[in-house]
Amino acid sequence: MLLHGVKTVVPELCRMVIGKINFISSLFYKTLQLCYLEFAQFDFAKEGNRKEVMGVDIGKLLKKLKNQIPAIHDLKLQTESNLHQYLIGLGYEANKHNKCVLLTVTTSPNVWAKMVVYPSLIQVDVACSQEPFKCNVEGMDNLTALLEQIRHFLLQKTDYTAQIPEIGTWRFDHCHFNIDGENITLSGKDFNITFESAVGEFKRVYSKKMDNGRNVIRLEQILIPKKPLSEVIQELLHQEIKMI
Image (cartoon, rainbow, N blue to C red; front, top):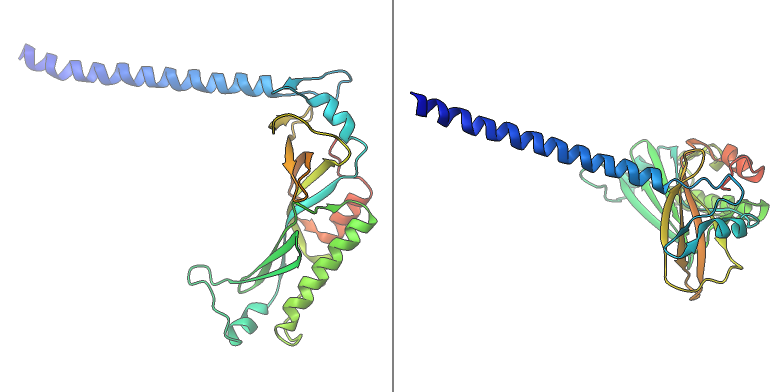
């Protein structure tokens, strides 16, 4: 009876001890993560507060980037539409799982768009990392011209019978907000550093290889406006959205 009790208790004790060890290990790992995040927070709002990471003087880089014109790339927009039913009627094949019809268009060597047409909405993704749209009048004019081109490309599929709202009403869901150091000479190894600003925003600074062979420094932040395109453009033009 005693041996039977020992055989029962010992494995249970082992399981309890192992569980405690796993819990402590997990807690220790999370503590290390928190320490690392705390260490990685760079407060660039304070003058003279420079951190050098991987041989890169981040504070110095940000000061050089401050006077550059910001831009946006990798855009995601959406709008309601009945285009889907027309495309199906024209023989376009829909994905069996999500019923979407995929269309693409290339407007220049560095800019192309993907249109995912669902039964009641259109999602438009614009890839332009090599040629971002600058946040000035010329850049926003180029963006609206591109989106108008996409809208008419879709409308032409149905001889302008489908309903696709004006681009100013399209919901701007996502983009990468960036500043490129176009006149900054970059030497040494490539780098990619993510940090948290003084106001809790996560940003990334990295070396970007361009198609022309140049290496530029890019400061980048993800924006998720979820507002009409017209509103976002006005905010960008009036510098209501800032990077530095």
